[in-house]
Amino acid sequence: MTFMTMTYELQAPLRQDQLRALAFFANTYGLQKFRLDEKKNWLHFDYDASRLKETEVEHVLRMAKIPVVGRVSTN
Image (cartoon, rainbow, N blue to C red; front, side):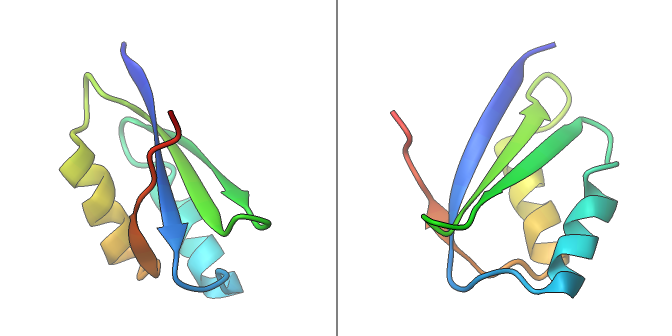
């Protein structure tokens, strides 16, 4: 397993329905967990890169209607 974290900037704070959708998708094969940084308005998504591609993680976010601006480089 190769665990990765992707960080996204959000357009707006997440609503309760969006948080529920993320919790549902967190059960998707290879997605481990997510963390919300409310101060920076960032969403961190941990996933197994040996099972999922970055584009699949982004697809999950689109399906959950998460208002993502774009990826954030945390290096």
